[in-house]
Length: 355
Image 1 (cartoon, rainbow, N blue to C red):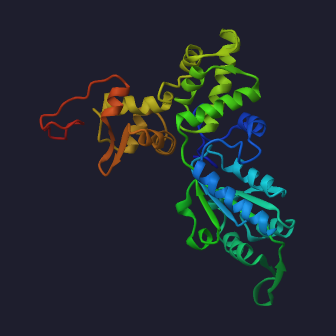
Image 2 (image 1 turned 135 degrees about the vertical axis):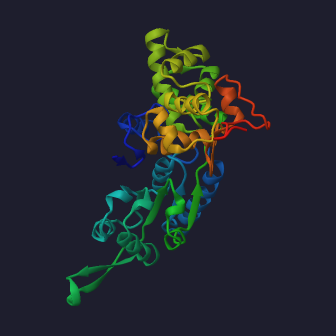
Image 3 (image 1 turned 120 degrees about the vertical axis):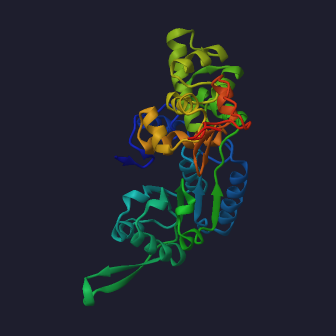
């Protein structure tokens, strides 16, 4: 099994919150340039605005910033806004790219004063580099080891003041000593449909796409609370509207387009519905083990667990229990199925020896 930065190595899904090649190209044009233009994340935006304004008033570099949350919510965008608000250059790298302390030392030693260093997936950085980062963040100094064995010598290297912006999708994997060195920590929440509608209207203007209020609402409701997914769906609906209609996106056009791409009204795609159908139709709603469910769907265990299940759990369609995966009443209702009633009044699969 091959793994990339976003999980199992599977075909890119339309509702995958990780970026693809097209996303990276388009997002550069759609990204807001300052905090006033940034949509959503009101608390984080307000708090971050105070941090940056105070730093500018002092004539100092901003405190180190840690941004956590699911992919596609705007962590990279906020890091670029931080650099723009501080009128500083930004350097972008990632945790998996820093496998040795020397890799990090090379980056740190070349920073300019006040520069913003954006470190994506910071929880995946190697331990030696992580320990070097402690001193760099706190004292703006690193010790470069020259030589090996008893003759090794540590040469202290002074660093110019800089701002580290760390981004992580799994904040719990960060060791406390590293987490404590960030002056500001912001957790990115999933967006409400109304916020996604604002994102879609703004993106439509930049892409020169005509979309009405109902069309934006239809796409927003299927975007899983994630701006990256909303923008991706907008581009696919735009394509459909240009080929099948007059180029104007309304509710009917948006619904028809997303039906073609197999994204339903709740944001579930083919894989999500396959997992639910197997759980409901083959196993009576569960409980059923993850491996058995994966075999029934025809996918790898990791794909079901890491790709499909998080959204199904968040939507209240599936529950993880010690006995296995269990469908909720909402799952039966979403697929238009009637749950079987057990003799004891419980919903679910019969036991090995009956009820």
